[in-house]
Length: 273
Picture 1: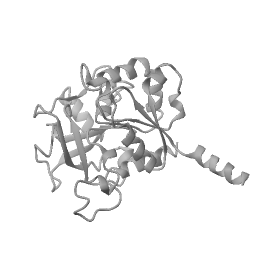
Picture 2 (picture 1 turned 120 degrees about the vertical axis):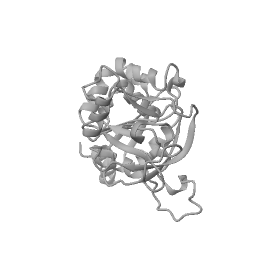
Picture 3 (picture 1 turned 120 degrees about the horizontal axis):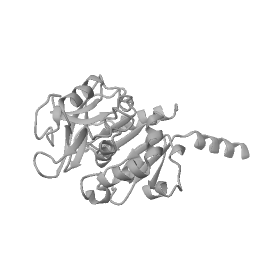
Picture 4 (picture 1 turned 180 degrees about the vertical axis):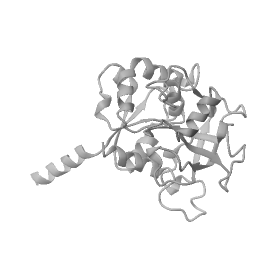
């Protein structure tokens, strides 16, 4: 019996520990924890204040997720206040985490945070100038729908191994991916940093409503040049089982939703670090 207890404890220690970073206004943290744990890791929801007060060490984790929602009510701009906390108050630990090649994912509001910290596109250690942005949707309104996405086969992203066209929900008012200049866009393309693009049911670029926000090149998600930091507007955590699909009662769907592979890849990779 004692031996069995030791074996169980050893198994738990060996499991990937994932940090789901939250703050006031975050509202997709529970879904993100569920998706990560379904992928085989141990996930913990931790408020950003615990890191600011040095009560928790980010180095104790192998995977970082910044979930969706409306951090600090999106005051000033979507994700701006949380990004500033990470950029100026948690800079050293965030940089150390990302540059140790541990997987980092920012979903929706989390994507907005990552581009404002400079971790994306991440041309330098932290981009001094914000080279990308997520601006107001071209429609001028909040878009809440399911979208088709194609996964860029040339992408370096570690999260998307074996993934093809997928179907995920979006829910945002500021999701239009923009770049500072043509040079930035060229570099993102050349370095294989485009991860997901909006397409229609046939896998082709088709404009609104298939591209719900007007993003340049239909971009729905990008990664850094190393492939370990991913930001995306669609919500993979909202489609990890067939029961989250809008037509699950009418179509013969596989048990796992299209977002599940992304979390499995992240946990698998983190487990090797």
